[in-house]
Image (cartoon, rainbow, N blue to C red; front, top):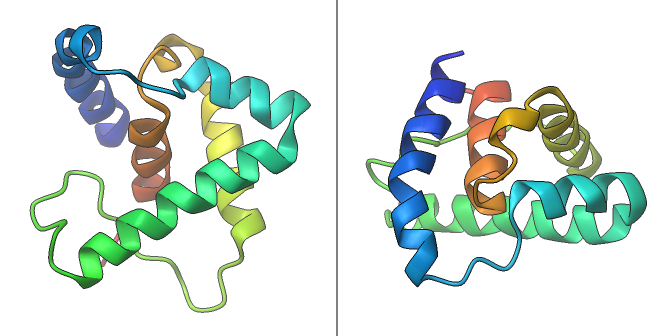
Length: 113
């Protein structure tokens, strides 16, 4: 629940920035990918997750609100299922950036300990 509130708070801050910055995939489009274009959803979700993990490895993601730690043996399909389920269960925030929703849902599902 804390993550959801963080996503909403960050999203409200980003709403102003979104007016000036082009966001290619929001949560509504990503949810549609989950339902109708699973390969597109998979590519987007795994791409965002990879980018976040690489940024962390390079110490570029320090201070990120949405840090996640995948368990040993985690598969890409698990990430896709996790994010798609999160989008299904939280329609009230699907207007936010898809990348924010991917990292937020993964940090909730796979918190670092």
